[in-house]
Length: 305
Image (cartoon, rainbow, N blue to C red; front, side, top):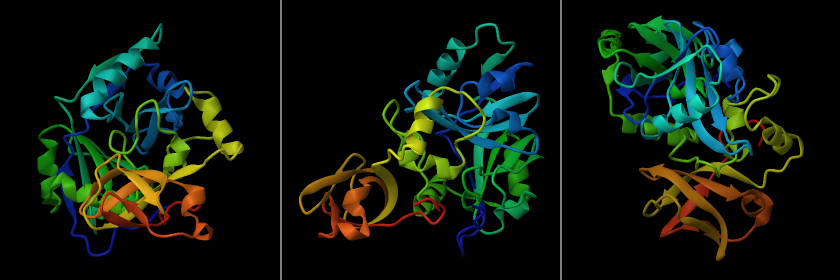
C-alpha cells in the first residue's frame, strides 16, 4: 500500500478550508473514541496517525476523518460544515467519560503537502500514518494512501514552517485532482451521510477499518458485510470524454441504470457502479452519464478487487 507520489508532480502544499479540527482531550480520550470509531485508536500516538469513520448503528457512513495525537489531545478533521454535527454526536456518548470536546477550527489549520519530495521535505517515510511533530503541530503521511502525500494540523504560524521547507503554495484543487486520479473517496463529496456503506466505497482498502479491535458503532453490520460478501456495488475512478457529469448523474449502459456519479473535476470523477453490470464479462456498450462517455478502472491500491 505504500505507493509513491505520482511521477512528475511538483511538491507543494495547500490549506484545506473544507476540513476543521476537533479535539478530544482528557485521560479517557482514547478509550472513549475506541468504542465509537472504526479504527484502532489505541494505536494512535505521537508517531502514528490513523484514518477512521464514525458510523450509524446500521453501519452507514456519518463522518470520516484523520486522527492524530498532539499536545495531549486526539485531533480529528471532519468536514468544516459538519463538525458541529460530529461534536453533537460525540457529546451524546460522553456520559461519565473523563474527556473534553473542543472545536479548534479557529486555532488549527488542516493542510496537505503533496508531489514528489513532499514527504521527504517533512521528514516522513512513505508509510501510512507515520507522524512527526512539525511547526507547533503535527505532520503525518496520509493514513489512507501515501501517494496522497502528508496531512498536517498546524497553528496559523505553522504555515511559515511549511514554506521554509521549500514547498510551494498550491491550490487545494490541485490536491483534489490528485485524489480523484487515485480514486480515493472523501466524506461529503463521495460518501452520503446515513446512506453510504464503507466497503462499497473501498474504505477497508484505505485503512479505515480495524477488523480485530472489538466493538464500535456499526461494527456488527460492517463485519457481516465483509464476511458474507454482500457487496454488489463499488466506487470506481472514471475518466469522462465529454462534459463532466454533475454529482448524482445516473450512469447507464445500453439504457440500463448501472450506477451514479459522485465527485469530479477536470474530466476525472468517481462513480458508484454495480459490479455485475461493469464486469469485463458483462459486455454491452460504453458507460455513459449525461453527455459523456466514461471509462472506469479499478484503483491500483485496492488489491481485493
